[in-house]
Length: 295
Image 1 (cartoon, helix red, strand yellow):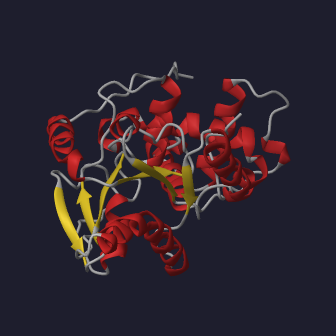
Image 2 (cartoon, rainbow, N blue to C red):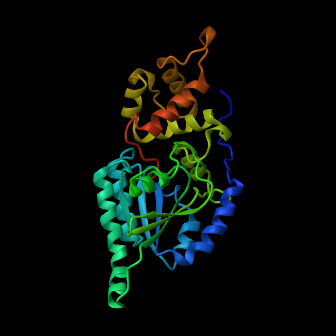
Image 3 (cartoon, rainbow, N blue to C red):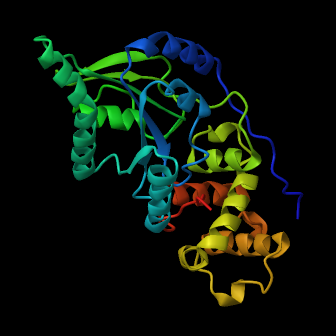
């Protein structure tokens, strides 16, 4: 088997540096930072820059893709952020009408002091001004579109679609500062790089996909073995007694074979299976999976 050591994954396009400067210029107008992170990787999908920007601002953390994450693990993360970190955090599915109503009620709480100050001064209240930020592909544009009620920001399941910042008005209640997904200039750890790549925050075309997919397969087997075996038509005979990388890779190849990823001569089409596995994980077809836990 080829050496499968993880490779360095870095991606910091020029527009991210430019957008960071523009956001800092607009920060004085902002009342609330709404940070969108991925519920499957709530640690790695957060950018420390946003925490820095929010030091003198209200900060609301939204764990998106909650419908794809393990609900029991997501609950642990909510307890961690709300109780230990003293940061207001909500988990939600951005396409859920009920979750959107819940979010609007939460935003109303932040708007209330502004309304009360305007009323006390006999002035017309201004909208709540929100910076919507996060790493790529966490659902920022989906959130903005849902709040506005029409398609105002491009929504695609690939990172780097929004390329510049802009203010958007939502009736008389909200003004949203939309920004591109922002990654750190240097991703902090090997695990963070893996987590961001697995969830699609980094473009697939710059990644070693087969290495990434095998590592993801190993992680899923570690925490969700029954779901993995069921999805790829494996049974107990396919599972080795030990869990070393060679045995897991043999199981990985067997899963590819069961899904018909076979080239002429009977060779395994590992690239095709890598793309299949990543797509299955990202769409929730294997199970509701979380790759990070507070512990």
